[in-house]
Image (cartoon, rainbow, N blue to C red; front, side, top):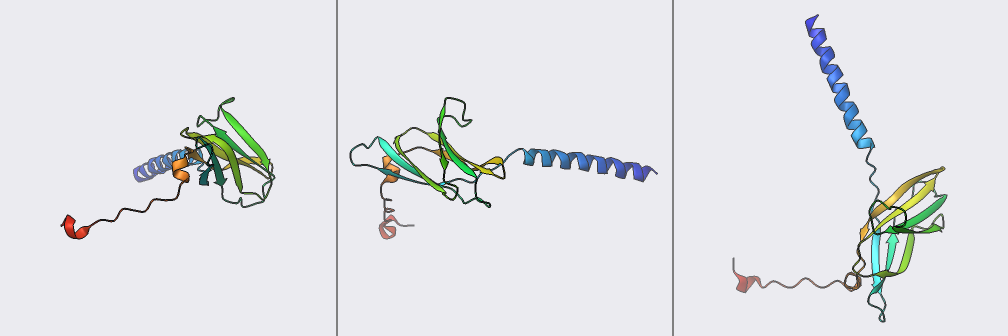
Length: 146
């Protein structure tokens, strides 16, 4: 009888811990990040064109919007929405973004009458990051020694 009581308490504790883990895991949705490319015009190095390329949704989207904001929570008045974007389109470019200002982005997709975030992250537009990659400097192993 006593062993059944111990097993019952252990089982109850295991269910509570499992419930907490499921609750914690379910509360965080991790969206993918978009592949980001940047380019700058010759005239205005302070205005950057940023292209966002996000993963295709499993089901064709009914509607897609790209939000760009200055705060990660996208509070009202602190972001701009671009859309609706064509259903099959998974790339969108925004021109004239200020260089050196960290911006947060999220791609909202409507599928089966439910919205979800398909991609999210942050980008700091920069003409330097839009430039060609710099080669890694060569290391002189012979004169550097062990």
